[in-house]
Image 1 (cartoon, rainbow, N blue to C red):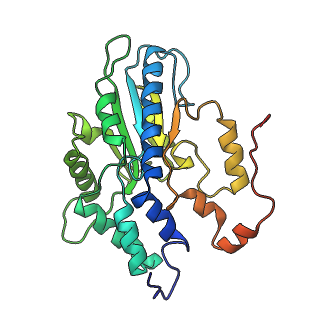
Image 2: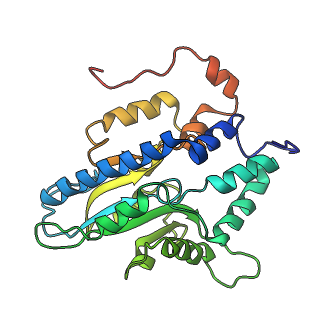
Length: 278
């Protein structure tokens, strides 16, 4: 791994092992496929129970709403370990990362996370008791941004759609199902605004992601203890309505540790489960 950055490197030390685990281990594929099999069983249960919702802001009688599920994209549907590995090898600096990441998106060649494509295709064939099909919304923090030599206001949208279609994940509504950061003025990094845009018209049966912030607001820069408390406050939803894919490469969990990972390793006591009775 090269390290020629005049400023901070884009990735924390130890990123090689995390990336190799995603790219090489049978354990990762088993964990991912297990998560999606469990999510499919939960989707079947949630469809049958018309009061069931995975969105805490949804209340009242939801039986008139057709069903939907919400999914993150990166490290949930699309596997981006290839550019992660290359950027580690190249010693990409922090200021170089946005351009390198956008160049990867433009290639439109991310493979599917194990189990994800099959899950989405199956979910779209499922129906609620009223015979209404499941709609799959993809809420991503891939950011709409102008690109040199491209007139599109959001070229990342076209790239992501093409990538998903190459994996057999097209649908008549796919362009409307994809919700990028910055696509609308109020669609920032927090995903709650986008779920609230869905909630008046659809009963959100499941939420699937790889980061605590895919499910909960205001945890991106919270302390590890505050994140654990937020996780425990939603304890009844994990593995029932909310499903997390493993991602040791990056995420808000790493931001929460701060820049000094040696100090984080040495810190005592280890963050313990804050759930009552655990």
